[in-house]
Image (cartoon, rainbow, N blue to C red; front, side):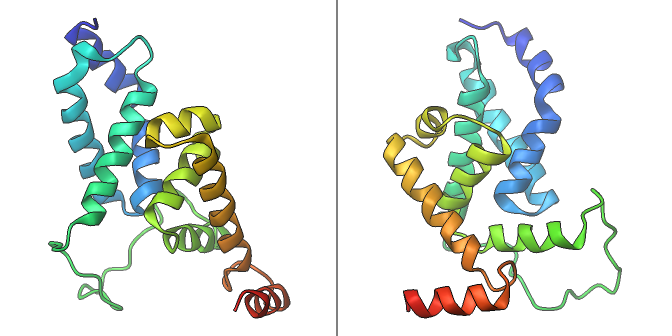
Amino acid sequence: MRDKSDFVAYVEARSPRLLRTAYLLCRDWAQAEDLLQTALVRVWRAWGRVGEHPDAYVARVLVNTHLSWRRRFWRRELPTDAPPETVVPHDTIGMTDERAVLWAALGRLPPRQRAVLVLRFFEDLPESAVAEILNCSIGTVKSQSSKALAKLRIDPEIAPPAVASRTKGELG
């Protein structure tokens, strides 16, 4: 059983990495901060029951919270093509154009497939850990990962035009 005082040390040590994971899941810094805060509140409540290695538990809470937010029918904010503000956003993490294209393509994936890729390749977790976090089988992790990577390969923004059109023709 974990002591509540350990929670503060854990949050201080792991917050940057957890925030990055939250951002990769939802692709918006403000929403990622909200997601992380909500997930950490849930973890705080269960901290006494969390084992010696809380990373998997916290990642699972983070992903489950994100997925439950995605399932909501009503959202407080509605995306538009052009923001009403005229302020040009600054690049907070120094993304290159290629990274921006990759993040956009990652955002077009279904939430479950995105979660598998984030946990598997960005967090570098083994398939067994991803399966435990997402509460599914290792085979599901493999198939979701394969489907997500296949979608990224034929994404017209990433793939060369000849590859994207040829592959879409074969699938369609």
